[in-house]
Image 1 (spheres, rainbow, N blue to C red):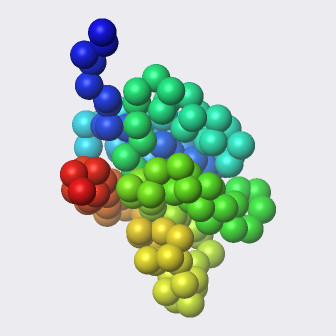
Image 2 (cartoon, one colour):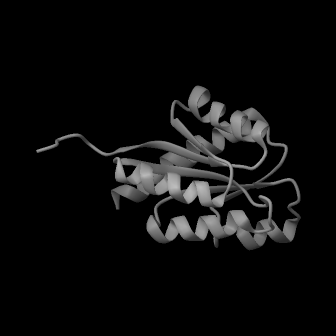
Image 3 (cartoon, rainbow, N blue to C red):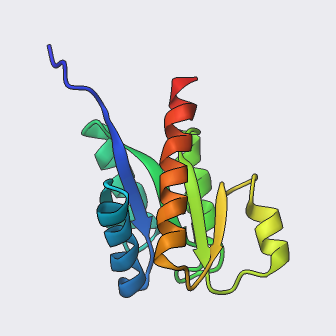
Length: 140
């Protein structure tokens, strides 16, 4: 019998901009001590999410761009992954958010909305908050 506990300390970062993808993953790993997994689009993200789950590496936090390359790709990804794991903490980023978008998304599709560019400290704080929230949701 395999007594290995599931691994929940995983962050999935999804962005079609390589620099943003690399930087966000680095923040999750170096500033938050979480394992970061990268995908360049929604399709890659879904495949990677399912692969990680099948290996017992559950994603606690999703960081996704909203517009990659089509508008609302991030929202669609969040909806698809939350259908699998409603406890998932989701952070959506965009360089084109307006106040109405943030109001519409927060609490419905995404747990958090961040406007690009995001400072390292702000993103690290949001990742940590997301991981703590995910852990609390899993306890219920």
